[in-house]
Structures are given as structure tokens and as C-alpha cells.
Image (cartoon, rainbow, N blue to C red; front, side, top):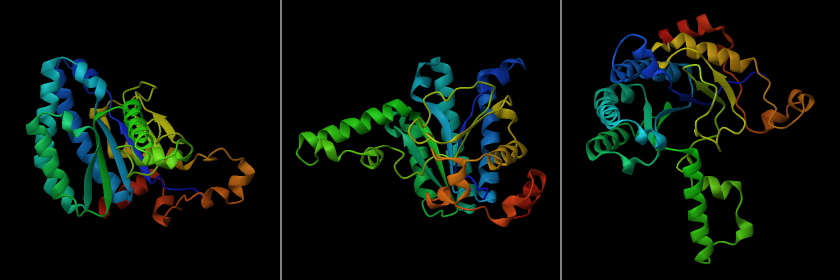
Length: 268
């Protein structure tokens, strides 16, 4: 049975190149990308995606030119303030993975206000990856477990995947089902390395500012056409073993082709 992706993660790449090819400043590419965020979040919520995680700012991004980083922080603060009412009206709860404490105080407070304002949302969880790195998240989780062992609260042999996961900033999120990267590059750039172990990866040449609801729907259609085996054989999957692993079946509406799915989403 084909399944709906429960957790979709997106590496929003291509803002700077989109701006450069048009003779614009990089900031203008990021500003246009914010509009794509708005459209994508709304479409995902209307399609019934439970979790959407966006790679908004990586640990490595702090190495970019100061003027660009400052512009990104202002843009993030503006987005948090301007979109919070719409996000709450859509039933979207916002969270953060990574290190919110690293952000400038004005931006951090705006994001914290957004998290509080949308805390009652129960339709979809939108996670913003901010000052995030997959390796760093695992290192910090390992340190936390090491501290527990040192304090005599945990035996080394008791450490397993679930205990490691519980110490990560992503511990409230399920594993990623579908990871999309825009902009034409085919790499994951330290994004959700642990959580995307069995994710379907989709790399599209579409630059993020040009990413539209139709592109998300096409990605979901591609995902639906994949057989997800999770290390099993095709015969085991066909016998229902994957369902036993906890995958949810598609709602009937999700068996519609992409154009009809978009019409249904707009009507909801």
C-alpha cells in the first residue's frame, strides 16, 4: 500500500544563485524565498503532512559574510512576526531544532514569541532548523549521555538508539520520510543525518524562490511510487511487514494525481 509521507524535510537551496542570475542582491533572493516558505507550509498543512522541517540556517552559515547573516536574521524575525497569525489560524505549531540561543536577541525573541503563539496548533508541526548541524546535534547528545554515565545514572551498555535520540534537539520528531533539496545540488549538507537514515531523497533543479505547491505535490507523487523496504526484502514489504513498522496508510484523497491533489488542497 502506498503511504503518505508523515515527515517531509526540505533543504531550501538556491536563493543566492536565483538572485545573482537576475542581477539582484543575495538578500533579495532570500526575501523571495520567504514567499516560497509561506506557500509550501500552507500546502503541506492542507495536504495533511504531519511534520514539515525546513533547513533555515545551518551552523556553517555563520561563516557567510556578516552583512548576509545580519540580513537573514532580520528576515527571520520579520517572518516570525508577520506569519504567526496565519500559522496559528492554520493550526500549525512551530518548533525549533538546533541552537536558538545562538541567534541575535531580537531574532531569538521573535522566534520564541512565534513558538508560544502557535503552541496550541494540532494540524501540523513546522520545525525550523536554526543554527543546526546534524553532526553537532549527535555530538551534544553523546556528551549528555557521557555525563549521565559519569554521574552513575546510566550504564554504557544501556545506551541505545532511543536513548541517543532522546538527547537530540529533534527528539520530538519522527524519522524523515521524504527529504527534498532544491537548487540542483545532490547532497544533504549535514541535515538530519540521524533522522533521515531511511528517507527517500529527492533533488530538484528548481531554485527555492521558484518552488511552488506543484513542485511539492510532484515530490509527493514520486515518493508514493517508491517501495520503502527499511532493510527488508520486497517480499516482506508486500506481505505487510512495513505496515507493522508503523507506517500510516494514505487517506483516499492522497491517491489522486498531483493536479487533483492541488485542487483538493486549495478547496480545503
